Length: 137
Picture 1 (tube, one colour):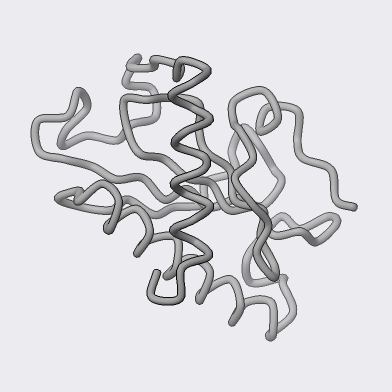
Picture 2 (cartoon, rainbow, N blue to C red; picture 1 turned 60 degrees about the vertical axis):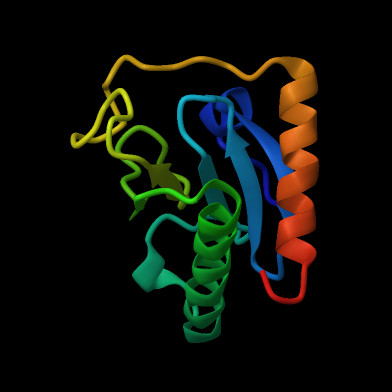
């Protein structure tokens, strides 16, 4: 089993595992924010994944993007893999709306963070997991 970087463990809640990636929910209710982590030991850069894994990653990112769009109806999706602070390969899928606290700038370093309440977080994880499992997600 691939272990998660300590920062990912501290800042996220597991949603479910797909064929390649573990889907995590960022514990910040300001934005609908998922993180996909390929379950490959030592993965740091997308281009270093096997060809089959890169193809699977693309499909799983598309699925995560559809889930965020369907559940939250954002104006724009921000999808990115930075890795400057967490070297383990992980890709952010963030739903953005005009007028959100950091719009139109990036969410990173915006200073806006508000953790989910426990019940709210668990309910959202359930909704997300169901949306990932739905045939038309």
